[in-house]
Image (cartoon, rainbow, N blue to C red):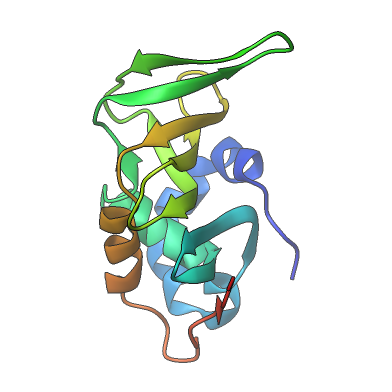
Length: 148
């Protein structure tokens, strides 16, 4: 099975919306790898996020970031942050950080800008709980690799 990219998914987003139920019911389609879709959270470890996971989290609204957050603006001279809030524009696909101390970053797809954006987020715990709570196909096992 091919690995999808986030831009590929959003270039065919209507297809995924229309075929959502059949994708999450088919183990092969559910477990389609999506490049850079993952959780890397200390002390939990690494968790692969599959296409079916993303679709469930996005279409339920659980991995759409609507709250005020800090946009990372990276350029050659400095690394700055800017406060930003957009309703229903950011679709989370990668989360890195620390459950206890913060310093968390999210990679999201911006519908309005049609590109990947890096954001600072206050907490990873809520999104981790949403990820753990979704219903997965019976053939899937948990993919956890310790980072310690």
